[in-house]
Length: 287
Image 1 (tube, rainbow, N blue to C red):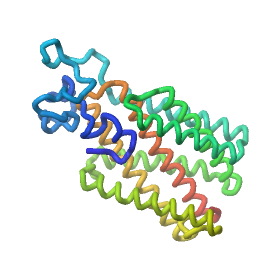
Image 2: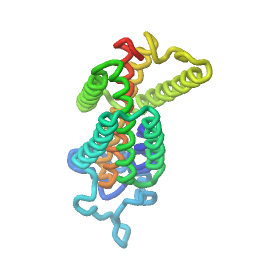
Image 3: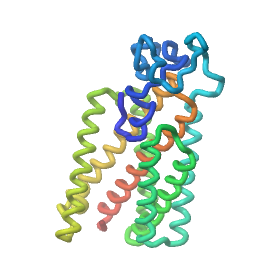
Image 4: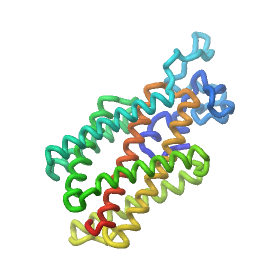
């Protein structure tokens, strides 16, 4: 199952880049009880080690257990995610306290985008790049939030609470299997996300060349609808991220991949926060 998140789909959290290590036929305790053919991390049922750079085997080609502590756990994901989000918050605090201008904020956003692309297209997680991305993303979020707060006091806090509520709600819906991440679910979200981004790009181009509010997707009733769709897409991304992390833990992905999980979850939460911030601003009468 390929995630909509470019970070997860780039590396081992996908059917195309599988982990077929010692746990290929026996997942960790608590994981799904399936064989190699049911393991989305095993590409070749006859030789699951053929394309897996992390698979461990002895000199005779037999699988060997990975060293203790070498596989990813949920605690690893939680710790790395908390660290990455902590850096985002620290960067946002600096930008807020120093009253960083919008020009510098845009520069920080561009740097964060470049760092995110570098990590997304690297074969292995790079914690320094991930943390640097989080720092610059935090600077951008802090500056934008401070700007919006001047026009709509309290909007950033409402957006933070809204983002937390979306995360908690989607986690409960996913854990109770009310929301199930299937191939059809993933295709639907991917189509919706591409359509959303295309409309956003078209609206931005119209704003640049024709002025005004473009096609009206970011103000008034249409803006509210567009914002709600953006938040819903973010919540669907979270569900797919949860699925990829759960599978990675169950099938024994390498511990270092927890940094990719943290990176992907941070990207999704940033998306939700920005959409929530804009939605709060519109509902408060200023966009």
